Amino acid sequence: LALATDLADEKNRPRVVAMMYVMLLVGMVFSGIIFSLFLKPFSPMQLIRVIQGVAIITLFLNLFALWKQEVRQPKITSPAIVQPKFTQSWDEFIRKPNVRRFLVMLGLGTTAFSMQDIILEPYGGEILQLNVSATSFLTALIAFGSLMAFSLSARWLSRGHNAHRITAFGLLLGLIAFTMVIFSEPMGSPNLFRLGALLIGFSGGLFAVSTLTIAMSMDQENMSGMVIGAWGAVTATCSGVGMSLGGAIRDLVAQLAMSGTIGSALMNPATGYSFVYHIEIYLLFITLIALGPLVAKRTVVSVSQKSKFGLADFPS
Image (cartoon, helix red, strand yellow):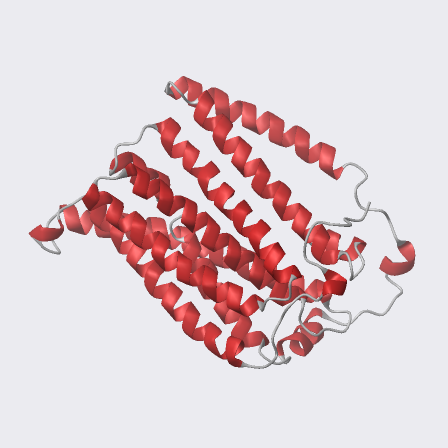
């Protein structure tokens, strides 16, 4: 993101980032499908072979992508050029209107959507009795949902829709998605679970794209790197924290539930998973509360027709 922001001009920057995320999601869709095919029938040795193959391909693709990628620009990067310290730039950035509230909202929403990341597939396998191939396909479903959200939000943004309202719409859909996942266990419905996973990807995609658009549209004076860096740092940190908390809470609550500590009515393997999904729903509500004043303010964020968010006219 930092390299793309540096190389692309302001007009084409949203399209560059859009293309990057589209390729990321397309790769996740195809890899999820491929994994589900190669892991059927499943065996421990087959899993090892797939992991080894992925490691080799990943190494090759990264070397290919990085080779002579960043052009040296000594006139811009020379140590002789006086540059402001990071603390000075950060203080200037964080003092801008609504920046603190936006970063708090971004962190809460990212954590809410990330807590399910490492427990969704085990939930399908342990609770709904899906095989390894079927649970691996969930990655493709989530990525496909995100890709649909990306395409739809790009169209909305190019028509001048408020990015804050798209963020709120994604959060509201997330509430429905996690509710579907929760009810798939008592209803014994793998299809409802798959639909919930698809909607998690779609709602999370709307949230990610719209918040990135808000960040890129902030009033700034040569601070695009700081804005993108702040967005990336918050999302990466909160994603890691969310995934760690999701796994730890699920294990702790499951242990308490199965031991009967929290009551015989909750002695169910699904209790730990359900507890995490309910926390995510509560976090989504809190995120909506944090987002509310940003939507209400007249400093709306939309993409004008002169700078569409779509992939048209992608710079060569």
